[in-house]
Image (cartoon, rainbow, N blue to C red; front, side, top):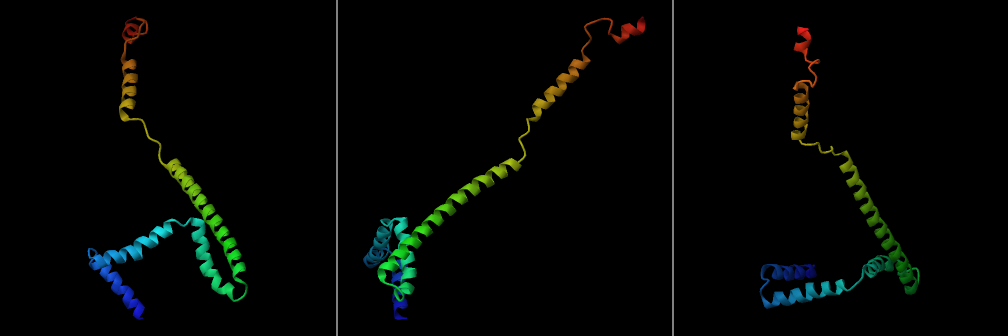
Length: 143
């Protein structure tokens, strides 16, 4: 219980007074150095360490440490392959969903200005006088 209080006090010092030399030293030792060491670890080794920490206590009572490490490496490989397959499946699913969404969207229609021009052009051609005088309705009525 006292350890939790000490951790809470250190976090309070780092959060409340970040400009003090003690808070800077705490930040360096408790935040910057662990993050720098974690950045150097590859994803595969990180998964291996997590699996080893989860499997080793139970395996330590049944088998030797060497076998526990081998089993952890095997499980870590399977977990890495599963995460890679899951990531690729999610990319494929997102691409497929994007195609489906864009396929269901209505197609853009041509601007109304073009349609009106075409209609007006048709009406104007209907109002033009025929080229032949014989086709003129007034001349046909007179005859």
